[in-house]
Amino acid sequence: MNRSRLAFLALSLLLVLPLVTSHLSAVDPSGDEDSLFKHLAVFTEVLGLVNQAYVEPAEEEVLMDGALDGATDALDPFSLYVPPSGVEAYRRSRLEAVGHSGLILLRERGVIFAVAVGKGSPAEKAGIEAGDMVAEIDGEPTRLTPLWQVQNLLAKAAGSELNLKIFRNQELMDVHLVLGSYRSPAPEVSLKDGVQVVKLFDFDQRAAAAAAEALKEASEKESSQLVLDVRGVATGSEKVAYEVAGLFASGELGSLKKREEQIETFAGETSSWQGDIVVLVDRSSLGPAEILATVLRQKVGAELVGERTFGYAGRLKEVPLSSGGQLWLTDAFYTGPDGEPLRGSLSPDVRVNVNPWLEEDPDDAPKDQILERGLSRLKEMAQGPVEQKAVEQKAA
Image 1: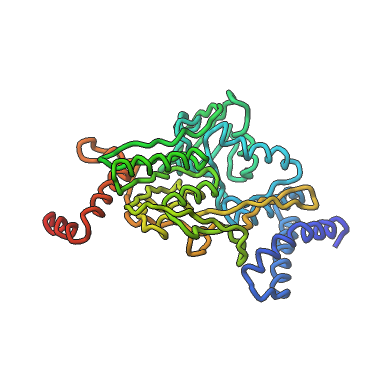
Image 2 (image 1 turned 60 degrees about the horizontal axis):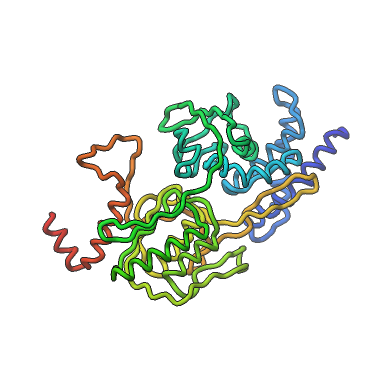
């Protein structure tokens, strides 16, 4: 082995050992060193073969960046690796990208896709929808583009323009996105069929105030039913989610949990709410939205109506590397009252199959199928099991 390859091997081991060790310890509780070195042997063998046999000479730095990017991609859509040259720019862009576009993108198994699109945001105005896969940005394919680089593009100054190609329902579409300055709308509290409906767009302090207002109005109207709409909500503070939940439920609400260690616990004050709650969810309900839905389901018997949620309520931690690069890793998950980490999709109690690509008949289909089903479910709850059974028998 010549000196350059020896240096390459040493660098490979130095960079990937901490990551691989932590990952394999989770897979192999015995911590078997033989198992660890078997994996490392395969890793170095693959890199060596690529270096020797690939059709063109491969740059070692590119190979290592790709290996680390792939390793974090395998963990979850939020964990990622940023090389030294991109760390400072990404620290800014990860905070600014949503504020300039209203678009939340993630990368999973090499595919960059839209998780959520803010109401009234530049992304929504451009026609981007949740679930769209981003194939190109300004003519450059995203297949091999790290997510941090895409975030840098979305964080460009207001007025900057991006030309995207997206896949939606197996159709390739051109999208022209003009970046701007975006803040999520204020919560909306409305009355539908005599029921207070709270529509949230973000879990900031406005969310807690809106929920408190709805509770007050419901109490004044002697109403015992409420709808909380967290569809499309993928941003905000997890602590605010527990705060909102604490308006309806008392006692232990959940915790931030790292393996078996409880880092922080959350509890609710004494609550007088005794009514029925329906929580509207969809595939863009993420993080704080899933915390609220879980706590209300477990503590006060709320029912979830809509689609399966995204399935992730974790905390990201910055881990500096000796190379100057950075890892953003999920180091802990939030839980509900049962103590189980929220790392999987929530399945609704009442599933509503929404096909946005099918044209709705305005005479037959409700404008908002999930909301209409949520309201009808509250009516069924009010009728009680005996009355509901009679209604079902009559309908049959």
